[in-house]
Length: 120
Image (cartoon, rainbow, N blue to C red; front, side, top):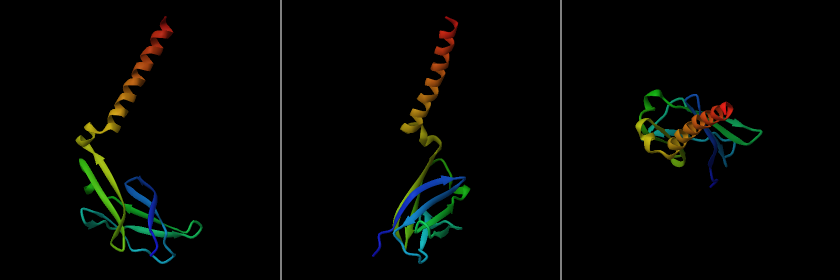
């Protein structure tokens, strides 16, 4: 059995995109699901130059909510990948949000320091 693998994933304009390697040109049975319910309008096309399937799954706006939302990507009912969306109040305790806040504050301090040095 061939080992399927999702690589190079991203979310762009509300659409999850991924590349499926390890499969032949036969159309895979890809499903993207949230809480066990398959998303509609999932498309995939074969890139013969790279021998990969390009997958696109629009994320319905009603699934974008506060908290953590996990989506699974499966091929023939075998989960091969997942992706998560994190939004709202759940971000307050998230380290990445804290780093972003610190960067913003550092930019303010740098600006004030440069202004102070220019005056002196």
